[in-house]
Structures are given as C-alpha cells and as structure tokens.
Image: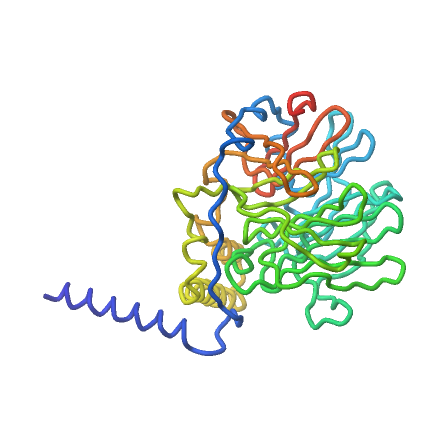
Length: 411
C-alpha cells in the first residue's frame, strides 16, 4: 500500500510541477507559443531516389578538429571554422590554425568565449567573412591573421528592436560588396538551438552595408533561419528555413524586389547550408533526415504549444539551477552539464541519428534536379557542400571529419 501511495504522490507532484511550468507567468523562455505544422516530407523516389554517389567520398581529416560546418575556398586553399573558435586552413596537404574568432577558453563548453564560426565566404577583396554564432558578423584577413568585427552580437539593426543574436550563414555580392546573413533566432545560440526550432519563430535575414556600416532586417519571423546563397545573377537570394524544412526566395531586384516566397518545401530533412551548384541552381544539404511514415518528435509536438512550452521551460529551469550552482561553486563539470542540458541531453546528439546523407539539387525555380546520397560509409551529418576545381568538399557541424569527393563522381 505504501508503494502505491508513494507512486500516486509522485504522479501528483509531477502533474503539479508540469502545470506550474506551463501556466506560471514570467518563467523563461518568455515567448509566444502557437501551433504550427511541418508538412510531411517528399518521398525518396523519382529524382530523389536513393543513390550511392557519395560513397566514393574520402577523408581530408579525421579527429584533428571538430565541427567543420562551412567551407570557403580561395585558389588552392580550403578554409573552415571549427568548435573552439578557430578558422583553419588546408594547403599542400597540411592544416594550420589561422585565427580564433573569440578568446582562449577551457574547452568546447565555453563556446560563448572562444567563438563558434559557422558560415564562411570570401569577399571579392580576398578577406573572409564569418558568421559566428557567439561573436557576430566578422571579417578575417587570412594573410595577416587578424579579426575585425563588422557587427557584434547584440547589435541592433536599423529600425528594429531586435538584436543580432545567432549569426549563422553569410554571402556577399560581387559588385557592391553588400553582405547578407542569417540570424537563426532571438533566443538560442549554437549550444541551445532547440529553443529557436520549436519556440517562437524569430529568425531573420539581414543586409549589412560595409560602406555605411548599417544593417537592416529584410525578413523576420523565420523558424530558424539558416543557409544563405545569392543567385547566379545576384537578383535574388535563397534562405533555408530549417524549422519548417523549406527554402525561401527573397527578391533583390526586379518587379518583386523586397518580397519573398517559398522556393521549395517538404524537404526530406532539415536544411542546413545552401550553396551554388555552379550551374545556376543550388545544393541544399539536409543535416538530418525526415520520413513520412515516422514523424520525428519536432513534427509531432509542433501543433501542441503546451507541450513545447513545457519542454523548453523545464530545460530553462534546469539550466538556471545549474547556473546558480556554478555561480557559487564554479567548476568544469557544472558548465559541461549546462551545455548537455541545452543540447537536450542524448536527444540533441545528432551523430547518433540515422547516418543517411541527402543533398538535394534544385534549379533557380525550385525544381528538383537530383540528389547526392550515400549507401555505405561513415560520412554523416553533412551541413554544406563546396565545389572547388578538382574536389567537392563536405562539411559537418558536429563530427570530427571533413570529406571530399572528386567532382567527376557527382556530376
């Protein structure tokens, strides 16, 4: 009888605790929770039929660095940014650290200090633009090994009360040097991106003019704004809306200037970065897959605001408790625990998800041209594809591997 009583009491305490988390006003995260749906994904058939084009990919490095999310190429040099805040360069079969976007830190759990470079692009001048999740929009002189802050994190855009919070990807025009970049959302950053995936959609597309040093938001209310890519003629750009598994098209010129539309949706995975296919179209890298026959947790709870609110408030309360403890008894283990909770424990470890890889190729009108997939091998969690003269490079935000494949194998 005592066991039954105890079980009932535990259930009641759990229910009461859940109700308090849901309905007590002012608890973090202080945001709007509204129902939404993620349309079911396209099936892997037709031009998306499974293939083994990426099975011939070979390792460039394995274990030296972690999280080579984005790749920028200048002549015979390959650059990427990794966890720890480093921009690294690959040349003549050797890697070297060029700069650290932040300051020296104890380890990965202090990404807010050391920086987390995500999107990389070279300007026409030869300097490297970096969208850093915790430092803002940066410019790196890779020859002099210096870092310049163009727009720091927490900077306000002109005419907006929102501040730069989570710089994710970046592109730049060839003629006038206008910079376009994504701000994934107003609440999270690299370490706790779930809050911007299932919370209030606050992602943005931002234009920055280096000449006037002014920025303005072109699009707002995006559910996790991610990859950015200008079109071949630079009359429009595309923006990945990761939280809804779709790609938006924003017009920069012509009669539709200043307007946006959905270029392609129902992607069979969550789109990370998007890059040119070199033929006027785009390669969309899907970080993790989606399946019509088995909706994932995000898709299932999207229409249920109270469940999403409970999950995020429970997460935030645990983080606040750990931060309070760390304030009076600071130690590495508590800091690691905070990062672990923000990553939603084992659920946030995407490296444990199915390791299938899909990169969707589309034309400028959103028509599917084909895909790059793998059948066997260790390649996984691909965030970006970058085409060089001989090789195409494949990055990942979480693994310790950078891959490449001969262009002839994927053409």
